[in-house]
Length: 392
Image 1 (cartoon, rainbow, N blue to C red):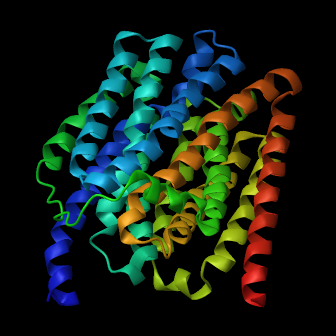
Image 2 (cartoon, rainbow, N blue to C red; image 1 turned 180 degrees about the vertical axis):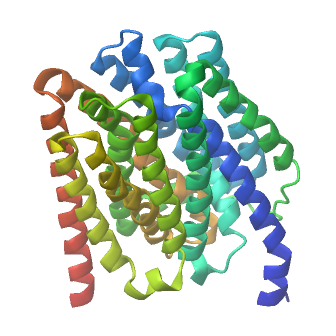
């Protein structure tokens, strides 16, 4: 029988290894993101086309995440999918390097989306190194490593884009996959015991009401993150006269907040108030953010506003993930995670496309107001859920 202390000693090196791999993986995925919309706009792409290119990233995830989750639960092999995901992330940027137009970025985003679909395996393997009652801590730590990689990518992009352009950022993206692939060879996978459960039994978990609710809240958070901080917020800042360095600084402030708030979500201080406090509060912050962005008078106001968006990525997403996975049986965790991530990938796919279309027809202000309305619906749902739980 392995004691808790022995398990901690055994698992700590693997936790650190996975954290480094996760940060490299997300650096690879996001180093070019702050300038993707600006670059595509600069080569003549219309807002609707930019939305389609951006949405391609979510489309592959939406299609692939549940099948990957089911396959993972049946065969219990996470390491293979992690290696495949890193390889796909590096390949995606090769398309952007050798085909530097809307077609190359569209194909690249499809491959990046497949890479992100394997995020299921990163999370499930990471969670396996923690006790069940430390799920929120595990969620905060891995989301923190995720956001740290994005922060390093955004910082590199901010420093280099102005002088070297998109081409170098895509080269850095492809290059980051190499050490991540090497380190992934040292991942030790827990032994998978028992008979593979039938697919029908695995899919039953997708009817769990708690899982569905928090998947929908994550859909709102992730969809709005991709539609605003990762794309159309930069267009709004550019309309206020922001240069490339200022736009990069906006992205860096957003992701620094996301990194710090992710690790805060893993702390005892965050646990004291719990998800019933943090989820509604941060949804309210995200609603305010969507209302503010199209009305800010100059670029200086964008900097503090980005903090609100960063909190949603760090705190809201961490708590939604742990709440969705709570009480899910071990043998169906990958399927449940696949369902969760497939649902929020719908938001990552559709919301940028809808935002681009609304911007083309009604203008950026009304597009952001529509996103604020969607977030308010999620806020109402979270409040009703937690009020009902208190009354039960």
